[in-house]
Amino acid sequence: MKPNLGLVFFPAFDWMINQTHPERPERLLYTRDQIMEEGLFDVPEIREYRPVLAEIADLQRVHIGVPTIAKLITPAHLVSAGGCLAAADAVMQGEVKRAFALVRPPGHHAMRVVHGIRGFCVVNIEAIMVAYLRAKYGVRKIAVVDTDVHHGDGSEDIFYHDPDTLFISFHQDGRTLYPGTGFPKQAGSPAAMGMNINLPLLPGTGDEGIHRLFDGLIKPILDDFEPELIINSAGQDNHFSDPLASMQFTAQGYAQLADKLKADIAVLEGGYSVESALPYINTGIILAMAELPYGKVKEPDLMQVAEQRKECNARVDELISTISTLWKNRKNLSEAALAKCGASWSRHKDIYYDEEGISESQIETAHYCKDCKGFLTIATKAEQTRFGSQSAFIVSHDESLCAKCKTQIFDEALKAKKQGLWQYVFVQNRLSGIIETV
Image 1 (cartoon, rainbow, N blue to C red):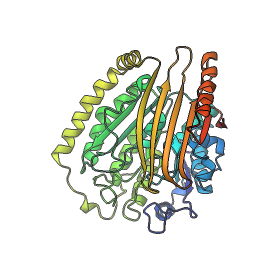
Image 2 (image 1 turned 120 degrees about the horizontal axis):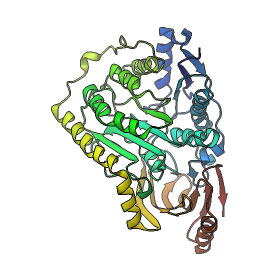
Image 3 (image 1 turned 180 degrees about the horizontal axis):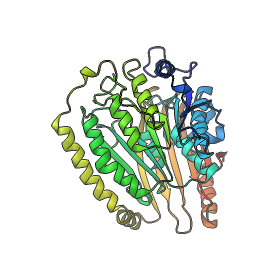
Image 4 (image 1 turned 30 degrees about the vertical axis):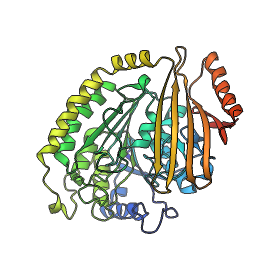
């Protein structure tokens, strides 16, 4: 019998933003000690895997770094992303039923264009894994469920135009927590309307509210979508003891959620209660994913969890009603939005990199085509980067383009080059991970 769960660990001893930063190696060391103490590596249901080293091309299927992604990362980022690829391979090659990549640095705040570190992230390790799964194994329909307390704004940015990726993020309301985004109206671009689902919860929401939301909304949507794979961005900072947020989830709540979600691959994201929460949450999730009993997993300070306020369930019920309607009507809404915008759709984004003080202004345009999936153009300008002020014009495409769009992408790039407004002009092939400089 094959094991139920593959585990990949990478604590990244040589990477930290600074020595007092909450995103530090101890986040995984206490978890590994707990797992060793419980003897979980000795049970036949669990197998440990070593991470592999991701290639720059793996990152470039997703990201355009300015000036290059190679100049913005460290080796730890290649191993963290590679840990996710090792987990994906173990599942797709049938060695284990599912896998959990306990790796750092994290990734879900990293957007398509990268100028530096934001929200502790440089590259989006889940999105890199999604692109890898499609390139290597031909997987099409994928659901990404982000259970981090912070809105997964980087994942949203990357998947916003993709009708084959269902992205669901439940998180503490962005009006009360970084990054200040993640509202229901941010539902996807016209070609992918309704495929981006944001579920902002009130501070103080606990096990009751989150399971009410999962049972009443998330599970029915997943069942209706019928993904080939479910990926869990497994942030653990909804815990009542987390110092960076204000939620009331418990280790048992997380384990039960993992049991219900039945993700094929989970990837560690946030969670900064290093001693009081992470070892117990991770143990509960591991046991649930391995189909082992998890009912006795309890954190030592469980008495400190607060009772959930009535308003929290009222918000949950409001979200269930609003998003259920959006989901049911998504195809009609998409057709209407496409008819209204015509051949292209644009959005302007002001993006702040909190770790480095970088301010970015970006205009992203989706170019639609009746004969293929079209392409994206992105105009980005950033101030106060490691390299000074930077600007770039990017043309990004993924699958085979029709003859008309093949001509148009290089016309767009050459036009931008002739304008002389940009330091860099790039053409990104998201299928191969090749980025050409024009």
